[in-house]
Length: 253
Length: 245
Image 1 (spheres, chains in turn cyan, orange):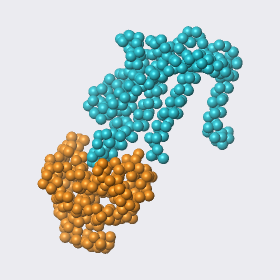
Image 2 (cartoon, one colour):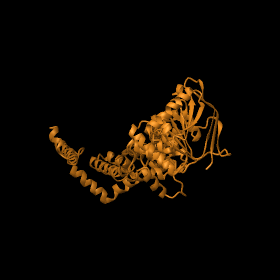
Image 3 (tube, chains in turn red, yellow):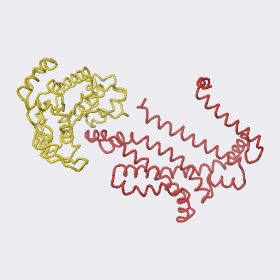
Image 4 (cartoon, one colour):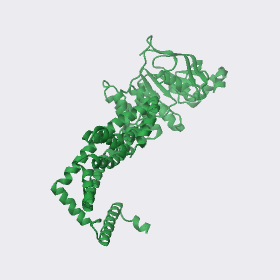
């Protein structure tokens, strides 16, 4: 069996496994024959309807905008603070407890507190997402900064590299894998949190819509929105993250 | 170019069990312009510490580095024990990075050619052999046109033929572009084959034991018997040195 599988090109294998998943879904939908599990065809139909009506693009767009804003703030702040903590041992010792606490506050608690303290407003929603993501970025970048090659930094110092040159040519290439790791785990985390934020306190966005469908028991729409969701994440991975990775790691080949 | 004078009054360090050690005491060294000076001393005597002090990487010491009469930091080209190239930059980019804006990039072409690396200029360091990486590090150090070239056992862990090849290329380049060189080694034969002057160092704390001019003409430095004869004579005349090595 294994030798038989190994002869099939991996791309075809991936397609086959995907088709198998759809087939299982179709089979289950037929067997169960209930509104709670619509067939793939029906979900696809709802998907098109939602796109044509403009509902799906509207809510997806709003969620994406929130994602971009909160992600950018969390990454920029997190990188700066992570580097600062990685360089300065005293600062790191001082703030380490804070980080541990913030890492362990449940996302839901942060979201509720932000809404309670700042009201059901857009900035509170963004702040809640940022606070949830920030400690992760800080910890990842801090570890990356601690792992910087001292020999190369000495070399840069000895050859009178300016601060800017040292950062772009010596430090950044070493931090890059850590930033990518923070980006990937960050996107995954923010996607999940942002829906809860919208569900609890906003009147638009994917989270709001999903809650609405939940109350209507409209599983087909929930699945249709999920497909849109997965498609967006995959596009970000393929169109932005993969090319960035390839560019940064071309020297490894 | 001006002579460089190094005077380290005291350099201490604290070990992990909080005991204070004196690494260098009352060491003074004059480096005449464009001379090749080899520091020879037992392993662990603090040679790398001394180079790091001169390169301004280690500032915790009492003493001074003089360029001519002035106390200014001389421009340094440092060839470390490991090549320390940026793995994500090509050979050429690694060299370009140390150049100032006033320096024409053509200097790189000449240096690459003299080190026989023209064909590898677009390779990334991981594709180079250790000997080639060392040659790139040598080019990088020469490219900044420094007051002083520091070399910290740059041929260590190379096999003998490669070491000899890199050594000959280095001497050839140095004769084309004379610079003051401070070369650290614990290999007396290697030192005799290259140096104008040998400086012998003692350990704990490190200080200069004696300075000896190498009288073998440059043309005969690759002649192993001449080098060996000089070494034997040196060891018989200076029993103190023999006890060091």
